[in-house]
Length: 406
Image (cartoon, rainbow, N blue to C red):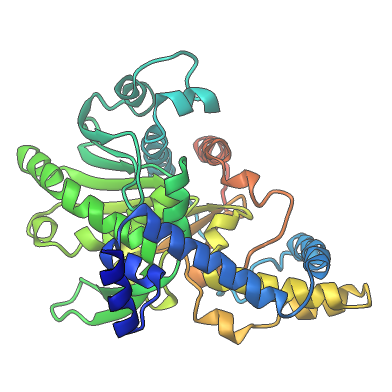
């Protein structure tokens, strides 16, 4: 078999890694190869420009630049213009409810570790305790490459079928995250017209593979539940990786006849929403109608794509090579557009709400990674939970919550 494989490799000019991808496109081995290739190529490209010492020095200087821009309110480079508005009680209630559902996909053990549960209980008991959902139709609490942990349940009080998708918790989830090359995806400009205008775009490969898997795995369960509960809505919720998969699964299902043939409302709620779609898909009327992304402050996950990572590394190397400590010069370098990185950038999907800044943003305003002391910690579920609670308290106290709307 080895001799036969080597014969084919020589005949068709394939490497062993390429043969692996052809034979097992969805395996952990192929995902490991793809993710390792992405990281290695990025590092090699950067190291051709300078040294590790210069890279580290440059990232420190980038941090100073971003903190200065944040203080001056300039941290949203190339953002759209905004106007004043208000966030409603119904809106913030939905965000809190959806986040509790997304949170429950972590499982009872992790929820206790994070401090959301005071005592040990089963996974289904945790869902009932935190999200108020007693009827769990399907669940998978372990993950694999392109197969994230998830559950499907029914919230009879909210008249909703819910799909909750877990974020990154295991090594194989990280492989799904790192398979971040772009792959083709077809959507529409809007479904509020008779003639659909097709939109061809690019999305995160790892998230799309996961969404397609869940679509096949869960569609029958969800449609059966809808048939048994006429008039119920469908909400697909997730945090981090789960939010990226939820965004794409929502866009896939929103076009299916099983949902379009009824008055079913389908919505995706992505918390700590990762970069999952290209600019051509990110803010079309169709995407904005069905997907809501929630981003907290400097959350790096909502700015992290192969393009933004490439741009950050290139900026850091240049800054590290600068002899002067002039902040103006550093800012000029940090604001330079790296053309080779632009086409590799992906963005959060749909209508994006930027918490702590009380604003909605065009997805493409999250085009760069903000190097700050809080960029990693704000991504934790606890921080999203606390900020949504804080916003809800302000809304219910009838304080004016200025929401800058694009």
